[in-house]
Amino acid sequence: MADTEGLSLSWQPIRAFVSDSGDMAWDYGKGKLTSPDGLVQDVKYVVVWHRIDGEWKIVMDMFSPNAG
Image (cartoon, rainbow, N blue to C red; front, top):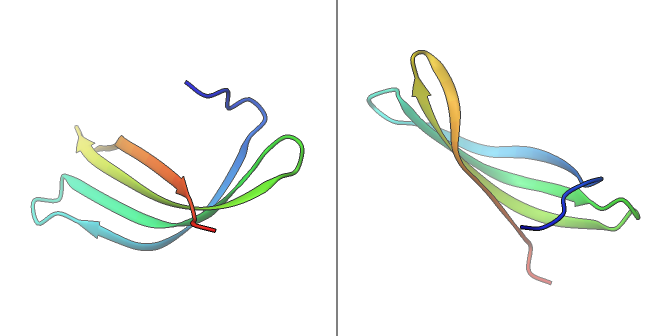
């Protein structure tokens, strides 16, 4: 597992969806990952949510660097 101490992530959702049943959702967007030494990497992300007992919980959270 990568060392994430000192990393900063900011994100901007592009679109979000909720299942017809209302208990699953997902969103995707773009963001910036900044390392402790100031290096900034543009990224894209997706997050999957599941509502359990009325609370939204993250099931999966993934991001990857943009090509280039």
